[in-house]
Length: 243
Image (cartoon, rainbow, N blue to C red; front, side, top):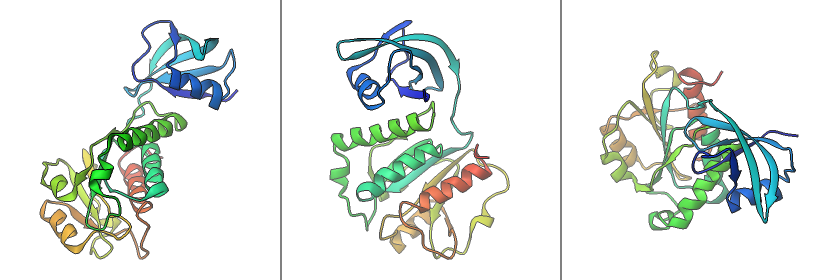
């Protein structure tokens, strides 16, 4: 049977666990797990718990929880991804893949050319849906950490906040490319990328005024959902835990 990695909001407190209704539905109906199924549980704190499906009570799964072990999948490089709001599946895909690539914080950003209104992005139902995408990505990638999902901000408000570490803004017109990245690993990196229409010239200038370095990725213009993942993969390979 394939390994199942399942998220819980809080660590299991007892050796016998009655799964919440939503997690039970996912385990029993979606994954079609049967008695004797081995699985691991995680709550996003770097620990996981071996468990076994031992029965069903009503619509809820009953698990026997065994040993706990620390298996922290957090990258040594703390990356904040300031991601302008994208439409539909592009946004969902970017959230999912950023989680798989070990991003620490995702900061939704509303910039000039975003096609999603800030007020719409700030609705609680959207925040809940996005959180579920992060959870599903962590489950599928066997991660034991969840990215922090910050509340959406206007780009100007984001840039006005204090920031530590290296700041990079992707800019196809920048003089510097990936060879300009520092040799020694920074403690943290903040990446600012653009929406479908890119960042406006004045937005890039504002980011540079706040200490962000302009960086181009190559001769081709990458899509809004591709560019942040490309630079994230490069940074994790150079300073983080890829490879």
